[in-house]
Length: 313
Picture 1 (cartoon, rainbow, N blue to C red):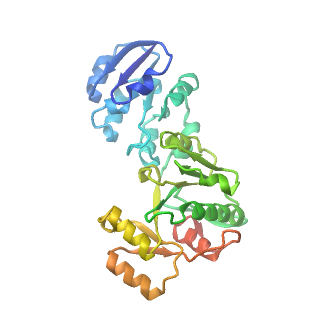
Picture 2 (picture 1 turned 90 degrees about the horizontal axis):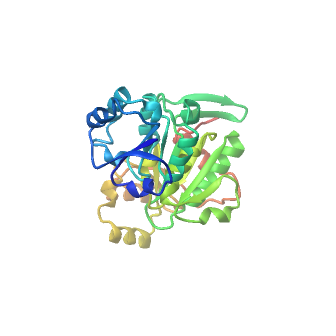
Picture 3 (picture 1 turned 135 degrees about the vertical axis):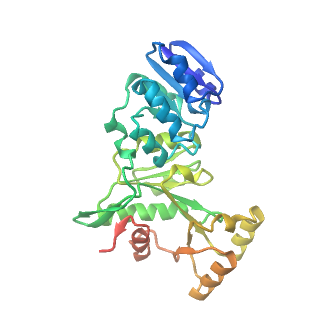
């Protein structure tokens, strides 16, 4: 029999047809759950993490791992939360949490087929430093696994940039790459394998399933960046697009101050780019001119090097 600890995601769990022996509803500390279930026999405990006080603090899960049988716990994590990213999941994995998901289907799967470390090892970031790996096509640098690409100005070319980066990584460096786009269907027009479209509720699940890829590239659109290890931000500096951007969000450039901003489809001179950078108060990470997406590009190669995804050969 199973135990449920639920709060804001109760509707996700209530749709499941599973045997329940006890349900707790509300917000609880780790100590309260340990006290309640220390001598309570259960097959599995499904915890909606919104029911945990300080749910974004790894110490909460550390306490639970000491007081409860961690191999019996399944964590339901909101797909757009700050916990649904490799950095936080790595902390959970280090403590022995191998069973976590973002939806009802994932819970049913884990009830029938619990994860082992082997199933989540691809998410485990043991260290942040990059490690050079030599291949017959050049050198790759492990360290960035999931890269988000986000349009700041409208229709700035995130989908096409991801397509070109993916082709370059696959064809020049012989790497496996998965591309995911959120809440759009532009990827279908590239007619390429391993380019999938999904919605916000399934992004984290798709990332958890991406076990056998060197890199995952995510066209975020309006989705939260925290699901990715790193994000680049695209701006097309035409007058009309910048004016529309400022109308939509006058504080946008202050939000981008410490971000990796890329000028995409740029026809500006070097002097114009410097002037734009000074006026906006942001640093420009890289500049991409209009590129023929049918051919390999030195600009894409140099971007991959600058991002630390490959080493210049």
